[in-house]
Amino acid sequence: MIVDRVVFGRPLRSVVFDVAVSGVVALFAVPSISGEPGGWKATLVGFGMAAVLVFRRTHPLAVTAVVAALALVQVAVGWGPRAYDIGVLIALYSVAKYADRLRYGIIAGLVAAVGVVLAALQLGGPAYWWSDALELGVVTGAVWLVGLNVRTRRLYMLSLEERAATLERGREAEARAAVAEERTRIARELHDVVAHTMAVMVVQADGVRFTIDRDPAVAREAAKVVGDTGRQALEEMRRLVGVLREPADAAGSDGVVYAEPAHRRPALVGLSDLLDRFRAAGVAVAYATSGEPTVLSPGLELTVYRVVQESLTNTLKHAGVGASVELVFDWSPAAVVVRAVDDGRGRSVVRAAPSGGHGLVGMRERVGVYGGSLTAGPTSAGGWRVEARLPLPSAPPDAGQALP
Image (cartoon, rainbow, N blue to C red; front, side, top):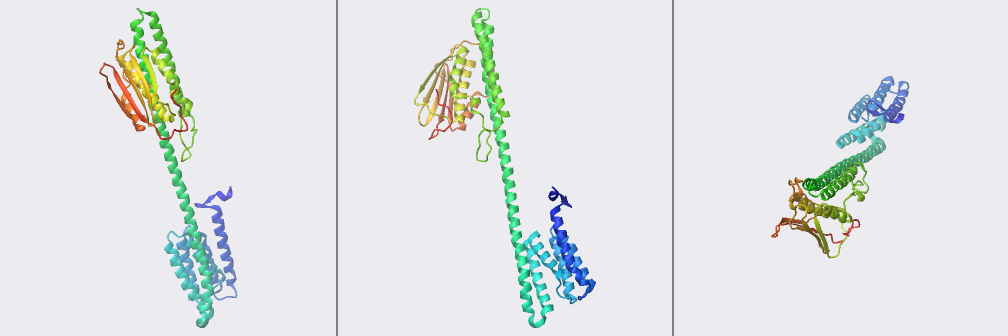
């Protein structure tokens, strides 16, 4: 639109308005050409005031100084107040509103007060100057106060805009931090998926090599487990990577939360499938629970799931196929304890499975996030024991899945 255009770095509508104001002051100076003291010289003074007023927004202090100097010349030569002296009031208003520092507006007000006294002396003489000074002082003071009030409101609006911009920058920074945190979490999930499933596949592939000649049926079953595990791993990886392409579906305190869809998050409702996969891989898993299961938050539920997955993966990697694991969930109002104890008596594989590199460290980190504790170490019977204790909130969350 035309009103949105910029001329010399200023909005076009502001330039047009200031030119119109300058034109009005110039018109008031025209009658001085004839019939009034000063003649064309007074008109030139008026034109000078009108010309500098065009720059009253960008250079209010300089404009006020020039207008005051011209008004002083007018008083010094005895021409008296003129109609174009409205330019003095416009300059006073401008410096009170647009000056960088308030003290410039105060100084301009004091100079205007001196000008009022001098003008009153020329109008009424020494005897009755105070009456004219009172009238001119009321008008001048009102203009100065209006300019000061508008300045205060303008600075207040600028502070609100700056505050809004600061808050917007803060929200953008929080959003970027949330995205970075979410991507880090997804990277950890991808590491867990790859590490756990690859360990199972390596163990089963080695079992195929070891038994393919002596027991083809067992080898075929192991090969089937390798394929099923690989497909399941690919599917879970697709789901996790898909989170990066999906918008947030929940709003937080700042209006933006990067929440993972619930159907894409491993949950305890799928614990039976997880145990069946390890049983198919050759680990005898005995599962038991005590106490009354409670509803867990999504993050806490995922932590419990990953502790179980990591514990069983370690059993398969280190104890070998044929090992037995006792998995126990102990529920209480204060905490849930997950305990996995294997006997360490599985068959040794052809070659040890490579380590995921961060098994126990990752479990401790996950458990520590929720203020829990993790202990892991060998048992007297030659096996391995992992126990994670996770405190529960005093009130159950609204979302999540209880242990089946």
